[in-house]
Image 1 (cartoon, helix red, strand yellow):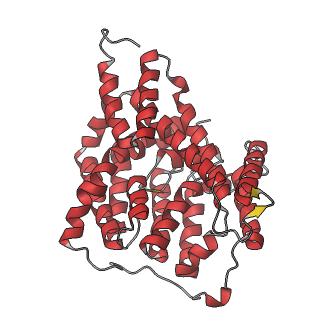
Image 2 (image 1 turned 180 degrees about the vertical axis):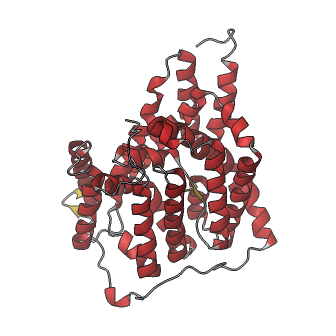
Image 3 (image 1 turned 180 degrees about the horizontal axis):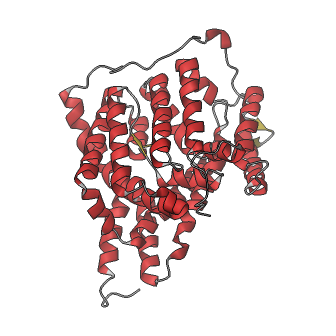
Length: 393
């Protein structure tokens, strides 16, 4: 399925479906930071869209764009200010760009064992599945109708979405993600919270530079131990090393531009731009790529499609873009996450040695108990320890 003869760009229904495959990861965190942390929706989604387009153009294959999960989750949970969030984006951009420009990321990638890479993919896959199932089970505040009798509407929609996706997963005429998203938006129009179109600020909305003002020295220093340090190992393990690995796995020779160094540089530049234009900290997540691929993305056309959608929606609707995107029920986003997680977790099937499987499963347990960054560090230590014949499992 590496598709060496694929064109660089394709714009058919499968590419459209694949472009929508990662909405389950992207939208909840992005919308959460807009609503709870008061980031500007125009800035957030224009930058996401441009990052999708530029990355797709440069790499020539599907590339995911995701929020940095450690920073995003902590920001939402604790109500961080916009200047604290963009400060973390600046530090991450500088650090990751340093690794890429100096070539240090090549050294880290070269000496990261395959079992550790697969452990990261397994951990991310299971975390995505858990998050997806939670979105299916938990009530959706955006639905005007919360239940049918004793059964939650989220569970009804999520179950129907799972069955529909199973039936259409490999259907090229009716791609699963496209059917799921379009039917979800139609349902949202009828059973979601009503949209007051008269309250929309119609026109062309452009992102403004430094929209929240310059961060204070306190903000810049405070985010280093709280946000940046916990995010770094997860970004290196998942967004750079694991992401590069599966890009090469999926697209072969067509992914020749996707190296540890170029993937790091791409993220570093995007996060520095995000600091100056008030976006969110972004990365190229392995889970996002698995989602795009699983639902049909095979060319950089998928990046142009989803990137163009975000830029156009943000320019036209501005801050009201959130109301439009919230039409899509969270339970259906959960379905996308479940299948993306399954695709990524199955990457461990090429591990044959018991020691390698042990490392991957150990990392899964640590990731669920703590976080993926800790799992990545311990996974490297365990993998090198098992190179000794004295240790057996």
